[in-house]
Image 1 (cartoon, rainbow, N blue to C red):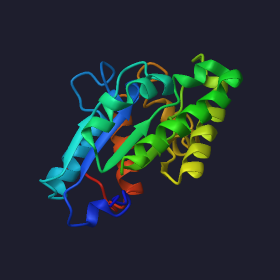
Image 2 (image 1 turned 180 degrees about the vertical axis):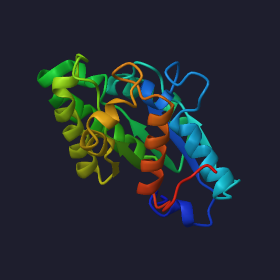
Image 3 (image 1 turned 30 degrees about the vertical axis):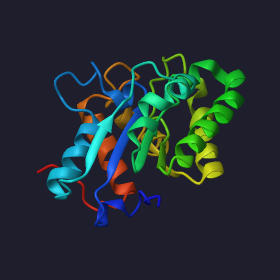
Length: 206
């Protein structure tokens, strides 16, 4: 029976959580010695919420787009049989511009349905903002909308980072270390917003 990610944090069943996606999810390089939001999520869930039997795995890879996840779905997601898969893609895909959007929706929908067919509940995340100087900046809004479409079509949960980050304007841009990748404070925001969306009313690490 598939667990519901929105109630998993308050249930009695130990949960296997799996993160996958691009470099923002992987948090390689851009956070320095600090932790990415998947690691912050793991600490919050396993230590502060006392869910010591939960597991948290991160299989994200820098540079990934939907086709890369599609091709690696068996090794990156399905073989682990997680209860919940939390996916973050779109920042790199947006480099394909308007011509790539339809394929992005089609292929992402197929990926999500394959994961769901294995009994895993799926949480989709829109990408956070990027600086106006980034190549994908003119197209990122459209790809965030595409992620929303995929979530609606597949019945997946949606964490709309793009909406909250764009609403914060320059304050959110200051959380990016290179105009694209969130730094340590940006990852704290991603973790807080994700946990809040999953029912953790006051996510802190103190």
